[in-house]
Length: 557
Image 1 (spheres, rainbow, N blue to C red):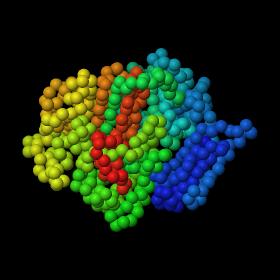
Image 2 (image 1 turned 90 degrees about the vertical axis):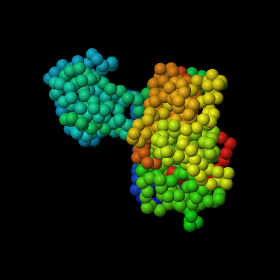
Image 3 (image 1 turned 30 degrees about the horizontal axis):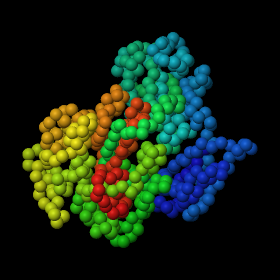
Image 4 (image 1 turned 60 degrees about the vertical axis):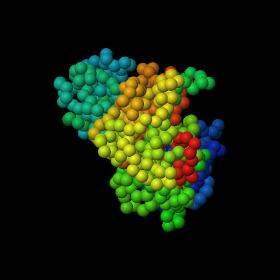
């Protein structure tokens, strides 16, 4: 069952709340359309598997909590999609071809049909019938949308291709994105298949989005894009072996500059805020702001002092911006719409979240990443004056220190020699790896490569052996059974969740690591920690928390 909603009246979260019961089972409690959709006049879909009663009845009850309940539409979705039965489409065919349905679920493009040539399907495992390749959907831009799937569940999508028009490579080139992630880039059917009238197929495993949809978008680069067939089936995952009683591997995934309330607003059962107090004493309801919004509220130590306001937590509107300011009032009182954090919600619901965890420092990213590897930052309070942040910084780079009066004073070049967790692991024979982007002149997660600031590691064998770039190497190390006992993973800028990254790919990046572990031999004995650095100024509520702790220090929530 799919229930469609859109908030058309209220322009703030918490204004309309209600419960929904299906066949005597509560499926939504204190449901807030505005919060779920991320704003007014925005559609959102909630989906639930449901069985009809013995009398063939499905009953739905809506109960008021605050204001009147409302629903915009109700769908009973055909069962085969929800149960994972294959859904196959023969593009451009007006009628079914064997188990492939007639062309449907498309938007854009046009069709072509030619049954005059024999199709070579020998290179494709379990190929579709030749008739599937007679038809094709073609266009500069078109899409297929599979609906009615189980939200956040994994599916295999296979795309069937055959080139019948161009007789040389580079004549037809196009891209394919699936649920917003690039799947095929500059794809050339002729080059891939090795000639004309030769079938080929490309497969990807993808999770349905929060609304239960999978969208494949085809975009032309040279001439027009095309597809002959689409095959969707539920992903088959081997049952993980029994859990070990002893943790043998630890993976720490580090993201950037988000608070618990910002990412996990309204998480069921968690201690989350719906509003905060600003410097005028007004209660400000949290408003949705996307991950890619590209405004960066200040999050340095001096900002912490201002916003913390002696423990009153009432000056988050006074922090200003580090980059790309906006004049929108109370911009800092925000949460990320659930449509962008569904991967994080899924992980939290399946495992656990830390809703009352607090940062041990009150500084920005450089300081936070030092705490992650050493539990200290040699009293450095802010980021170094130049990038990169460490021993590779240009001559003349300085730091800012906190003195014993809590005042900021000039500090030394950011290349220190204090003991780190890496040193302790080396001494105990524990294997470790620190996955981080390599240095580049442009925007890069290299600035968060914390061991660059530790002199004996930056200029020692650990830098060559244990600091691994690019950060995506962890995926191949898991697959190739090379995972070390302890792994830290630092993202590149685009995947970081940072407010100025202008990107919303962070949740998918984190999920890709967890998924890789989940399908590996390491899963039964691995502990995974996902955390966001900083004390939480970037698009935060009135709370100084994030989703991890880094030591014995504390801050008011």
